[in-house]
Image (cartoon, rainbow, N blue to C red):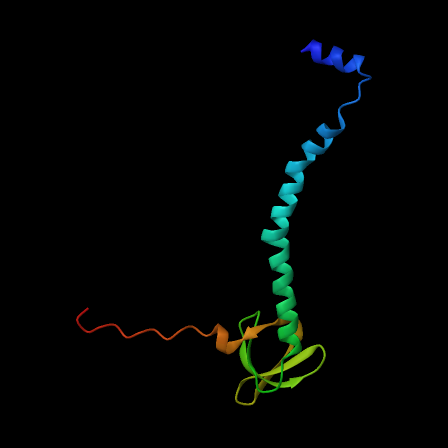
Length: 116
């Protein structure tokens, strides 16, 4: 144990240049893995959502993050007016529109057989 310390002291106490870089390789690999598994997909999802919000138009059926389903009856830069029932309209911030109501709808369940 003391032999390594003595040998290092005789060499001027400077570690080899390759040893410092090699010790950072696991840290670099972890960052690369986090980028491809977490950061990049989140950025893609955010970009797709911004494109969706930019393509909204009157008559679209949408779902908000609060769970309201409605048809767009008015649009501004920041606010979407939704008709959620006859003569019932609500204003929602555009950023809270999560997606199309048709893509959020649950698939129809097949009827169970009578022989059950």
